[in-house]
Length: 338
Ligand code: PLP
Ligand code: COI
Image (tube, rainbow, N blue to C red; front, side, top):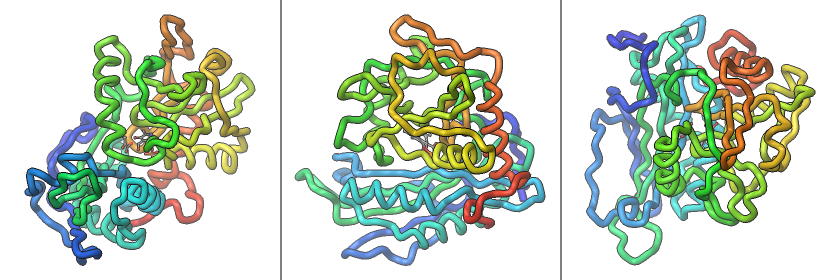
């Protein structure tokens, strides 16, 4: 295990080529048996569907070393299911759940030396993705696809670790009603690049997108869902058909209600009630739970505290990490041991 000579505790969120990735190809209406490959490059037609019309979707999950030295993944079945939803929305063939989980197992097992040690704060990020690979020039779905999973060791998504973030309410839109905001399409991220670069240039860590139809309700950020805490300790998360159903957020809401005995609400959250909350955090596989210290809404500052994670956010964070790292009992079926 972790034989690699890496400074695990100082990793950022970046790509590092690891030894093995999983590759399967779809042709003539079926998937081949798939294989592990040492080749981290892809050769394809200049006219491939993914290159011309961005026909691609992806997932993100992590493998961890637990306190007692096991290697585990967190709820990969939900990533498999969400990828099926993404593929259906993008007119791509689906990759079956059992095969997805088997591919996750194979990639993690083959890259065991790349799984960061317990206590380092790092993890092995897995990136399943699929794309149209044959040439497509009229606007239509490809007929041939490739599914891959690569692995890369990562540290915190946001620079500075758990330092509270400063985010802004964005004037750019991420997802339209009846669009693709609820699936993990590459195109959602391509069109958020302008907004994220602009946010960084203006000194913000991320954008919070309000609903694009009315700009009245909070949706999510470019790469994470949002949770809020009310003065009486209720955990609130925005409900919307145009946000990605974050596995981290769904897990946190379950943990808050059923393990920590907190009150939880999934409901529409108005932009003008942000100052009623006392804590805010961004949650996702990459983000884990990143505390938000300040939201700037067109010059109006809503400050939750720039020193630390709030107490309720911290409880949620500790519980989630405890479950993932094996120091707290996980609900049935949440942990896949590799
Ligand atoms: N929202 C967006 C737009 C994301 O890209 C992600 C990352 O996957 C999330 C939310 C968090 O989802 P999850 O907790 O399943 O990683
Ligand atoms: C993840 O959390 O896995 C994501 O895909 C988010 C991405 C912005 C890195």
